Length: 145
Image (tube, rainbow, N blue to C red; front, side, top):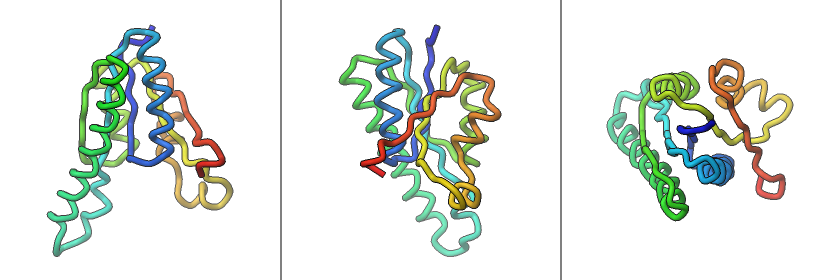
């Protein structure tokens, strides 16, 4: 049923909660886990001075985030594909899912409510609304928010 599971991460506790679920599902179905970190190019594109340093720092952060997923998956004996890409987060996630024939996307939610959710939008919400694949959302437990 699930051969390729995508778990996008931003390195946050909410994303980490999703990783636990993704690993459990991958174990159950013998699936490969795809760990994806998207460097939001718009976050530093307007900077003139130091933009290269910011880009390198974000890439290092992304490498560390997918490495943590790979380590957790290795402990469970699950194969992992690690990717760090640049782009708009939700679009990059959708493109990756399509290009790699992903069967399931597992994502964390930050549990924002009210005006914060309205103003900030939600990468997870956009993926849920527009993905061709099933998307499992995992909310960070309230005591950890």
